Picture 1 (tube, one colour):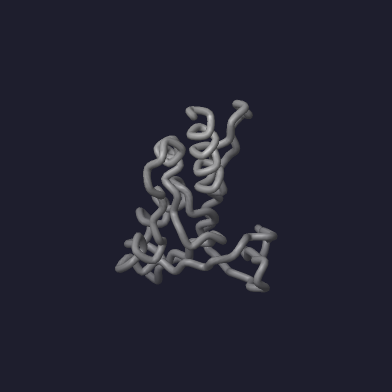
Picture 2: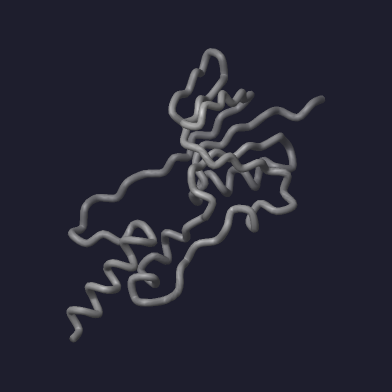
Amino acid sequence: MEKQQVLVLGAGYGGLLAALRLAPYAHVTLVDPSDRFTERVRLHERAAGRPEVTHPLTALLRGTGITHIAALATRIDPHAREVDTDDGRRLPYDRLVYALGSRTADVGERAFTMESAAELHKRLLDGAR
């Protein structure tokens, strides 16, 4: 039996784990515009001045057989079983994993990305002076 084509949208914790777990059993394509995985649960460490908490997807996917496409999914056609991307591709799939993440409630300060964690770190240092 031929392996199915699994398309995973999103390379956060859920999407990356799904892709890695499915890779031995299917042809897996991971679609995410970023070429890096950000350890979001460690962004507080970045805000406290520690080094970046990101990892290149190429290193994390090496040897897995997973294909990474650095693009943004713009349209899902469930009847045709295809996903369109912002770079003009049309990606077919047998199974689709929708792991595009979530947004947290506003807590006043933002440290949800590497850039915002670094900005928060700078504001904290400025406030300590």
